[in-house]
Image (tube, rainbow over all chains, first blue to last red; front, side):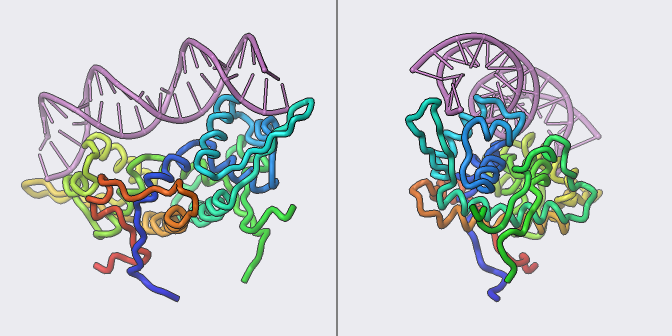
Length: 132
Length: 132
DNA sequence: CAGCATCCACATAGATACTG
DNA sequence: CAGTATCTATGTGGATGCTG
């Protein structure tokens, strides 16, 4: 086990804060991660409460960040599948420690599952793959 | 080694997103963590660029979240020291994986240290304690 | 020194309606 | 189905000036 004074540059934060600070970003990452791939309206349901605009915006940003992959199929009706890139999967797992920390912190500050979140499957993250 | 399908509730995110999404919160947590404790104006310098209002706001929120401890000394001039609580230290460490992920991701998306951040000592996080 | 009060600017999210 | 276009509401950060 390596020890204490290992330094990690905090700078990447500047880039990543833009991602994780978005209200829905991590939820989207996780939802897609859980299912392997999801479609637009499926995400709307999963995230329940998000507006198409917000979803579209976030999806686009996530693609720009290289976290999501978008595949559109020329069918009628149109079909578009979103899935995680390697980076996306990496982020998804990197967040777990924070979740664990948040879930176990002693203070009374810890949040319970809100009704809103409880209703959605996507409110849980799994460490491993989605085993699809 | 435990495996794949360990589930982590994503709900705490709702509470924690409010913290980590704040532009300066993690930087403050880290800065204080690095030094053990810091004073208001010292933080202003460390974070360089933050306004007193924003710092005060964030500091207050962090206290409410139970991440920071505030100690004021009845001296002239007044002195106030901020330090991390157990929870604060926990968060600080829980963020490391994200930092590491961000720092090593393959895409060209990865951010370099901005000049702004490069100038501040607080832009680095250490895994262990600050060994004060 | 360590803030608070005020006002302002901008980014993000939601509602709603419409389109390829 | 998978978005886009608008408009609005809100929140978060910044600037400046003042106070215990």
